[in-house]
Picture 1 (spheres, rainbow, N blue to C red):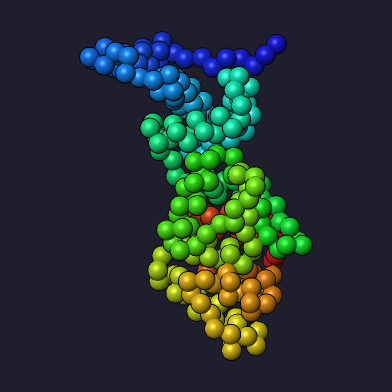
Picture 2 (cartoon, rainbow, N blue to C red):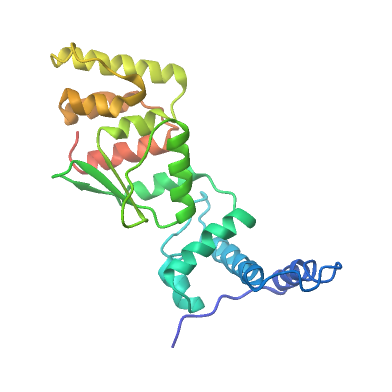
Length: 239
């Protein structure tokens, strides 16, 4: 037997019809294109899918809303699913906190000991775009990958990413601590660039295990991304 088709309540069906009717019966009959109608139908479908697979803490079960599962259910390609997700968010946005969503994915990250890079799968294209936009607004960036679901960066850039979410005063304390560690590591002659701390740490060749262990406790407890990364680094032995 195939997967069970998504089911709508009578109230949801009534609300959906009212939304469709407003696009036809207000002196606007025939103005919607086929693409507009398909996007609206996808909107109804994805809203229901997200509602049914969102936990009480606001985190979404991305496995149940994966491009693959949706493509199987709707009989379209995974790439078309991703395109529809992006278009749907522009026209019928779903409000979500990207920090919470991103933090929830970090536990599944991988560490490449050869390249010294953290590799994270970002299954939702809209989440990927939110993270990318946030970093670019702060003057940072992510490495583009052939696989558009993959986000990859060096461990040293972890502190850059986490500092973006820190209050200004706490950020100053962390930077002061970094300078102190560079001094203790005989790297005091190396100039720390505050807007590009990750790159500064790479050039300084400071011991990452010592650095992360002595800096992590300074990060705010409500910095969801930082706390998720701290747990990740502990799990891979960086403490």
